[in-house]
Length: 283
Image (cartoon, rainbow, N blue to C red; front, side, top):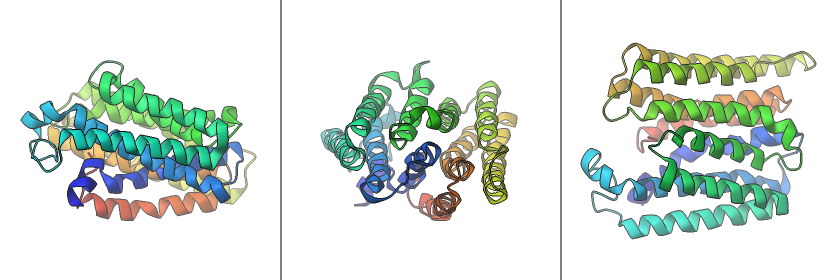
């Protein structure tokens, strides 16, 4: 079980559950009943992407990260590929059950984006854009029919994912100040999309402001450290902070749209994700 949890970065799925919640809140779609299956679909796609990532990188990992499940021999390459396929199918099924035909259409686009990123785009100039598309589509998965209303939330998480992906390329050999600066700029843009505006209640504005500033403080500080000294250690730390930073960003977007309780529930998952990350690395 430990090998499979490591393969799919199992605890890191806690950072993806809020994508559909943020999208649903922005579109005014209550997350209840069968729609509660949509966050589970997101988790399935995330795990599928992680398994496919290790399958696609098996030769590179043999040289750079031999301790990973495939190069260490604890999980076969074929089993990892099968896992990616099964989890993709599970994500499509859960999306169809939870959101009907429209959600299934969005989920199909998301599944295609996940496979394209892991098998073709990763490591290329288009890689960060591919990851941004995955995250934006995951937000739209929760939006139902009103995707336009959820577009700012999708843009925020997509921009954040773009920056984290740009920076993560230096996890093994170190990065550059310029790329760390790009990630930091993306964090500033995403944080700006969370900050509240007029027309909302005071509680909603305060909640969104609190989650948004928490996101900027934690993710921005780690990325600023990487910009000052882009060593492999600092880049890995900033990448992990960026992954966990998805949670306060999602919480802030939900609160900004009026779903303060949903935002608080999402934020409550962050301490658990941080503790579990000490056992299974999210990067």
